[in-house]
Amino acid sequence: MKLSRVGAAGAAILTASLLANAVSKAAVKAVEERTTPSVSASSRAPSHDLIFYSLGVLLSQNLDSFGLSGHEFRRVQQGFIDGFRHRANVRDAASLIPFLHRVQHQRQQVLIQHQKEAGAAFLAKAAASPGARRTSSGLVYLSAVQGTGPVPKPTDSVRIQYTGELIDGTVFDSSQRHGASLTVPLTDIIPCWREALEYMNVGGEARVVCPSDLAYGDYGHPPTIPRGATLDFRIKLLAVMPAAATGRAAVKQLRPGPTGPAAPAPSRHCGPARSRSSAGCPGRG
Image (cartoon, rainbow, N blue to C red):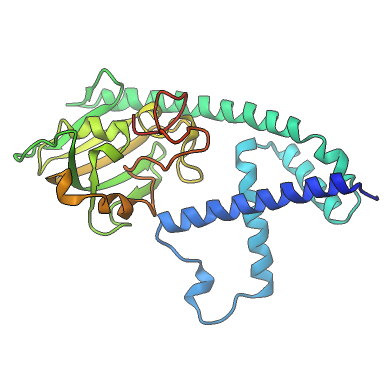
């Protein structure tokens, strides 16, 4: 079916944008996990089949936020086939982009609400554990080992070891992925960490469960951290240093894998200030 230049151009731009977004997500995930694609582990070039299978995998990453049913996924498949074989009117499909955005937003809100409800139940269970303390902000703090060293001040930097999990037990980040430990200014970490570290002495170890509004909020850090996710950390405080002793080098160390405790880079949704006063913005506060 013959297409108008406007319709074809719009569809081409959308497809390129979706693929670029998928490739970007995959690259971020690979860096965060400190992994490299399996094909690069060999001196042989990847097979033709693997290259184009990978294209399908990357394009599929853009479907997560729709929460497709089996029937809906089959319709997506059919649309993909018809579009590829030039049996579909791309201009008509492009005219539905605003509706796609609306459906995507609505379903994201449903997924976020589901995450928050599951997170609330997880927080309540953690708060009922022996020795647990739930603070006024909503985080749950459980001391595992009481340290004897100094307590960090808001302007200090800390050297820590940590593991971060989603509520289903999936490990999304750990200091082992960045080396044995990390050094970071308290001004550059998520609010949950900032508060929790005020309760710790050097040498101490704790479990800290963070509600989403003290972590990455409604934006999450896809694909690693879902929108609205509650996060479960194990933290060991190794040392406290004045901020001047570490400068900004520690922040650069964290930027390649910004999930963990580091506050995410500025989002186009949040603006350059990274202020949590913006609704849902996972900034520094």
